Image (cartoon, rainbow, N blue to C red; front, side, top):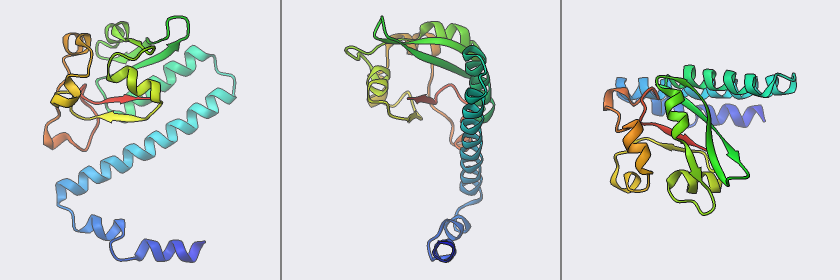
Length: 171
């Protein structure tokens, strides 16, 4: 109810008070994450509206990819779809720098999953990989990913934005 929500907002240790204790850099990072979260929520609402309005599927995918590219400030977005006959996730389209070449690389076997992409897609989890050079992650990424996309890590000063090729979001 409204009274309990008001009490939560002003409770000690709440997000507002915690935010006030952060360094300016950490505060900017938190604000950027909040803007990104709001942008993603708005995009999901738009996608739902587009789908309900009968927008053709290819147009829906293109609009969604472009919206994600803009909101995440990514170098590229690759949309992959499940290919039931091949039991794989396949790159369908891309937006951004070298995105079509990147989309062509995505052939992710699901039965059985052979790498981190296949495992994540099989489990249907939303996942953000923030450092593809982390040894635990790097050994589980397919060779083509390292060879073709050369993703790495993000510098500390840019942690507030998801604009690098290093970030992978899997669903």
